[in-house]
Length: 178
Image 1 (cartoon, rainbow, N blue to C red):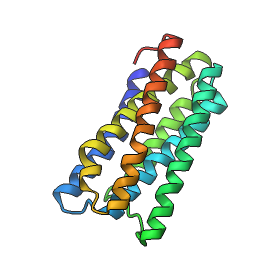
Image 2 (cartoon, rainbow, N blue to C red):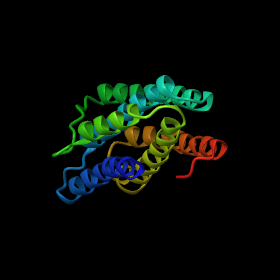
Image 3 (tube, one colour):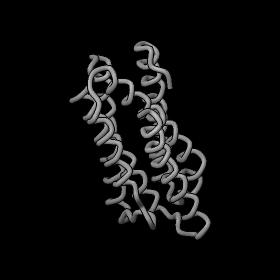
Image 4 (tube, rainbow, N blue to C red):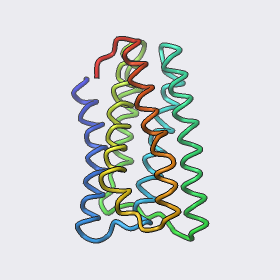
């Protein structure tokens, strides 16, 4: 089952990078598309965080899930508020399959219980945060044209990095390899 979970996470990560790269190549990676990708990445981790709260076997997983969900709710709202202020309507990339990829991740996580859930959750969160950080730094941030939007992404990026650090620390504490 680890392989399937890894494939789902890799698929979502690839979607972020592929969508971003395709949009760059076709000249369509504009602020509206980046806002949509940014919003979706937050939505995915809000949902996944609440799964950690609900299904986490250990207190560490439940606490981590709550922190991640709560933080991403705030960041998502900042992005939505900025989009409204700038009068930008987020437009997902062409061929966006992130919703179906996330549904597969949710189904996989919900099929687990106990320490197996905790392990799958941690592996997902580590891979997810790393892929988002890489996409933000390598593709999305350099393509943002609006200074306020760029400043917002730069402001919240350390939060994504902190989530990754904290998730790795919980994994180490619980003996989960990633």
